[in-house]
Structure formats: structure tokens, C-alpha cells
Image (tube, rainbow, N blue to C red; front, side, top):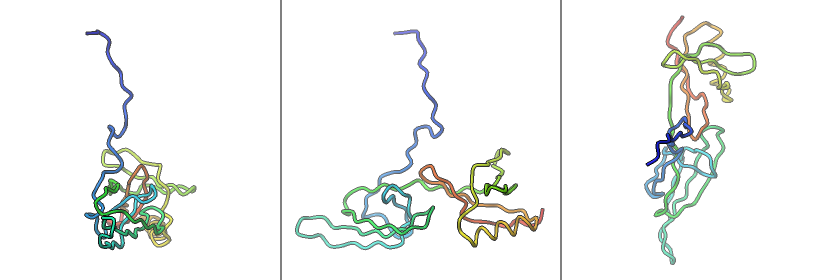
Length: 159
């Protein structure tokens, strides 16, 4: 045996996959699915009967969770689809910069400064008005497949 030590490049996600396989026939409405490489929330599922050549097919209509675009896909129900790991994390809002980025406070007291303000107009005005009024705001950040976006807001009272 050799006395040399092996050094490995460290990965931030410890090799965890961004998606996991799930049989198409088991994916339901309000579940998540990857269509054309984008994480989507399923809004409609319809299953066709088995035809002459065997496979029942699932027709998915889904909306991209980050940009709101509608996507469709048809997959044989016995085949596997990629399903994204979707996480929601809450952070306290500290600051909003002039260039459209937010500064958030994490659980361990660190700041997170790499997120933009949301593109959703209602949420954007709620965040800006609440921050201007000096309220203590908690934002929910949704992350999937290496992307993150502000998706919800909670007011926890005045500072």
C-alpha cells in the first residue's frame, strides 16, 4: 500500500443530485417535474389509454417555478421523469441595494447578498413598501437546480 494521501476537490453540495427520478405515472398535479431542463410545477396531468404499441402516455402541463412560462411534455407513464429537489428557506430581510439586490440574514448570522428582487410586481411592491415603512420582513427563498428566487413575504411586525 502507498503512504501517499489522496486529496479530493471539495464540492459544496457533496455530490447531491439536483434531480431525482420518479415514474411518470406517479407524478400528480401540484407536484414538480423537469421539462426542457427547467424545474416546473405541474398544473395539469392527463393520461391516455394504452394504444396498439403498448404504453399509456402522461401529458403534463406545467409552469416554470422561476420565470412563470408554461411548458408541456408527453411521457410514457412507465418511464422515469426527472423531479427537481425544491427547497424553501426563510431569511430576514436586512437591506435592499440600489442595483436591485437584497441583503438577507441567514440562520447562522451570515449575510446572503447574491439574490435579486423578484420580478413579480405584487411581491416587489410589497417588499419595497414594507421595507420603506421600517417593518421587520421575512422572505421565503425557493431554490431548485442551482437557481434561487424570492417567492413569498411575511411581516413579523415593526423593528
